[in-house]
Image 1 (cartoon, helix red, strand yellow):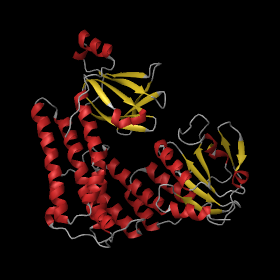
Image 2 (cartoon, one colour; image 1 turned 135 degrees about the horizontal axis):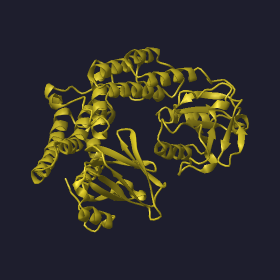
Image 3 (cartoon, one colour; image 1 turned 60 degrees about the vertical axis):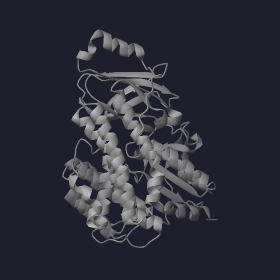
Length: 465
């Protein structure tokens, strides 16, 4: 594992000198700041798990700084524009970062107290990203050969871990756990995904036969670590394990969408394996929603939704899903789309009937609380380029003209006040894509731009005369 140092980067040098010389380091105050080159917005947001800790404004030199007196040691993450990255903080840290948004992760470096820890985590992240193609190629190997390759990678990464631990005898146990997770769990996640990846890459119809040693490492896994559940390497491993464990119940490989029985079994696997209430509810909600959106249609898997309502204990999640089911009863194929208006970023209102008249149209409704702008920012331009004849509208639910998505033409961005709808079809807060032909007739009332099925659906829409 390569470990880069950046001696030429001294961010907020005066601040760090001040902290060191005045004795403030004797307190538990944590300083977190830095400089953003080519900023996308005027602020940086710091999170703990999924809770906002602070919103830090950039000054006229694109620098920011926050101080915190009661911050607990652990993982946090910061967000700027549509991208984010993790930081590890503990009392007395004075962590400063520098990044260029044109190359967000690759340019990110840290200075100050706590910098070495965080630079190593970034290096691990980048190395793992670079190895994705390699691991994909491994998936074509037979189980024994795959195991040999994987075991070599694990050994190499454990050497990196031991080297750091031996060279930092005073390092906290909490950080060492995060470091080991960052190094090893991406590999564990790939092991759990190997059976389905092997089927996909080798074009076979059945899973490979595996002996009992293949998952030997599982006996050392804590599936309910609350300190790591929001950390991507750990969360991705847990997700892959849950799917793999469900497949092991006897299901055949599924590529485009999941059967009703698989979804029900997965929900029950989550209920059995995940003991942390918040995490269990989050997995249950994500599963039932993801599997619905994967279909990219109004078809409802009633058995799966009933299982979700039985197992989830989160009232807010249940209300969202109930609203989704009610929304899904509206605007089915063959119905005329009319009776409401959308507003452009000059605050000009246009009726949906006029907007879709004579144009095969993709209406993407979204709310910022339930889908990231970064996903929309990447996905919509891709689909626009792939299907240039289609008329795209990205419509924020209860938004305004201040919330523009950077890489999407402003002429394609709109907002809508859901309270003005005579019959509200957007009550769940979930994103919804409606495909409308040039006569204003709905072709698909609940498509999903994230689904692999969307390509065939958009192709058919583009061919309608």
